[in-house]
Length: 517
Image (cartoon, rainbow, N blue to C red; front, side):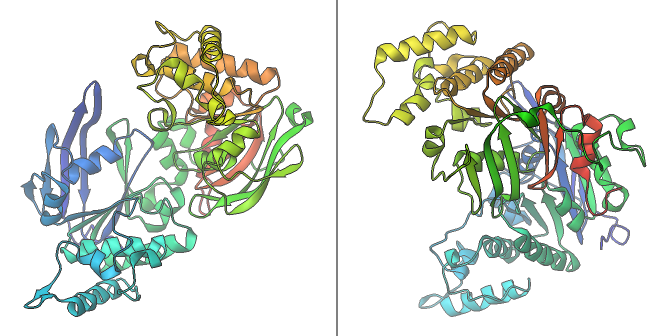
């Protein structure tokens, strides 16, 4: 239970924090109060400013304006180590420990207890055991960390934070790779720490988890604090609307969902199309709950949902970028197994990743070289595509997609974001895919480039190509999709034909839960 009323003085307070980078105002006047004995959850869409705020708080970035107060005293952490020494410890999504070392060694890295003969191994193991037992975790601390599942590794990272007498514990997306049982184990530990008076700042994008563990919620949007709320006073639908900036009218108490919700939806015309790909029970532990998905020839299927809802995870499983641990995929009614993206490419699937910089464009290579990568990967390294053919393809698609570049030999890194995205789209089109997965294909590009890309993709769909379209922009998903699957908290929340949903009703589906109001 929150101790807000009994402890009116915050252990940590942020006042008017602002931070700008070249051409981008990442944070603008953000304030936050964190009290001992509470779990305060930070929520917001991708780009809301959550990560930047955590980096300011932990000394990675210095704020341009504003103050950080710890126990009422202004502090200026200059590094993560400095923040730790002040009593602000962070556990990140990716456990940053050494799996080859023992549990005890990981807890005490850099702080090994010593005696005259050297390191006090027995004493270290005893203290490590006591720290973990404080969190109701009883394991053999002499075994390598890699021996234990990710949830236990998270506990080890937390116990390391407790070792330095942390006043504030920051958990940055700690549950992204955990399954339901592991999440509950982590939450039982957090509840115990809360009862001991620990102040916990919990960063997540999962609605169910937010309501399972939070005392208060701060919502961020576009680098600003939208508001701070007691968890018990904020319905799921209101929270979703505040995160995405939906109009106040869409959260009216008792507002009815649009047609298609809570009743059988009308049959879409696309249901008459032949099925190209069907996945049944497709899932991956800690990433996606088993779900069914069907893609029909000449149809655009939209995946809608908030960041972390499972949209990208589903796409990566379909493409073989991640390996599913449940379910089966059939193409043309023949079961297929993708050990790698190369297998998916051979089966006629293309995938434009949402991460254009790290998983898409190779900025140092030319437009031509970037464009033929997927085709060359399908051909294999022993069958080089002749330069003349590369040039022919590049010139053809530069013209077809209206890619603005001085030459096909121009480095792609010198092109605008919209033109880079067009090159990546062309990369997959040259492979003549039967199914094209587009994950946020219009993110970060100008309106005209967005329209040009979506017009071209829609034309491909009319010619018989299947499209799986993922976007955070609900109006865009609703406008172009023949069917929509709404994702929430790593599972499918429902499937709806064109016209059955509007923006408000999509938010109702996303917010639906056991205590949905």
